[in-house]
Image 1 (tube, helix red, strand yellow):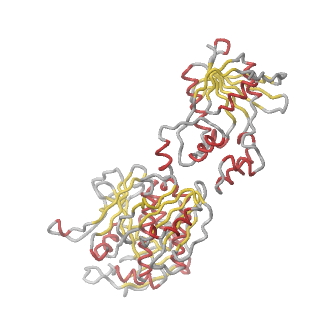
Image 2 (spheres, helix red, strand yellow; image 1 turned 90 degrees about the vertical axis):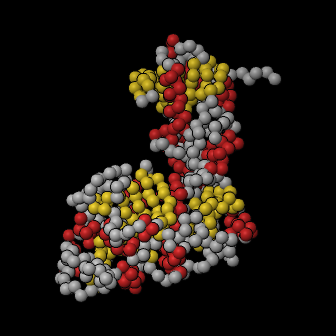
Image 3 (cartoon, rainbow, N blue to C red; image 1 turned 30 degrees about the vertical axis):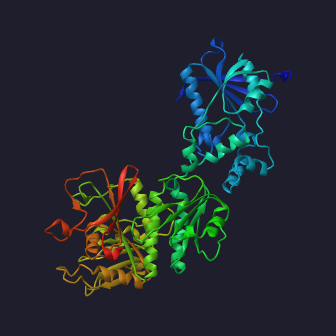
Length: 576
């Protein structure tokens, strides 16, 4: 077979300008070219003096990708390829990058966004282009060949994974004497995209950790913001529907869109739409025995995984390796399990028709929640603050003591996450709260104030009168102070007023009262890498004579951006 002759054509490039281009990757020159045929604007980024190049020189021909190059999108490898090529050429001291305006492999920016939406529904990158009526790859490299000839480069070392690009350049008279691979390690979002380029477009990709990524790519914890809507649906479903003793929870969705939730039953196959991912929470521990049920669910998704819940409050929430499909990270679901276990614990309380209470405190390493003057901002990091807002969103009410309400003056909203603001509950002590000074009054439709029964009724300011619900509570039996309210009566009073799950957010003294009364079912402690040496302590408990008298917990710990969150369950037989 004779060698194919190069395609001949008239020059259609116009050099518009040349300028210096200092960048974080090095100092380059930028050449501006106009395509006289379609008036498109193209650039060449050059390192070194062209006339002094040691030919053949390294060249990267890069098609424009706004989402990847400028916005840092993880759906493709374009941004990483461009940056890596710039570094390679800077290190070599000479080379060329030609940047062509061919967004979305030639279909344009808006059509690429349309293709993204189709990919969110389950199509791969090739199928999405074809569904829109385009070929898989519409790019043309004639302009790149013209620019290379203008620069006097006829033999090049091409930085590419695409053998079709090599063939097309050679058809335009550019000799590619060497292909230099440019493989960017895949992430959770682009693994399918890169796999499709390999299988359907012929790209030559080799990854160091390809085998492990194929099984462990998707980290649930990295997608909590996407899954959060489904967790809220789960919470709302429990509020609106009576929990069943035998049920499964299904969280399903796509890699870059909000997820959904359904409560499942083995008696009826649910109508789960086709999705990228499916997470099953097995509340019965018999899901794997019903293989027909499992197979029908798994057939609709790319990846599926089952978790066994264990006892409602035990921390043995484990992955079921017998029910597994697709690519998941083997340990990427720890923080997700925090919120699922909380919902399971709430479900157990709903079934038993009793109120549910959990508490959360942020403290220094030496057990202080505030400085000596009461200042506690900002003791913890942004990740813990967001965690606290998530906990608020998963409860009907958020409760604080009067001292916390006065000193911190919190809004008690969920402004950092999606969800409904919980109802604020304030436990009032001896002194009257200045209710109209509290920030929460301007945000919430209702605020509940619990006050000692028998205390002289105060006059509620007219400005907040319609928002206040005052509930008298009996003082704690045996307490030296009549202003210490009975914790169990507080929970029962709130439950009678339609609040079945309560999040106790402080302060330390209030949490201590409920802890002593054995009313707290889950306790989250956030440890900040800080030593104060003085200030308000986390807990105030009765004096004990031996270590055995201390409160002992089952414990799990989690990393929140470098700080530690500890989940505690009081180790009592009555809790298990």
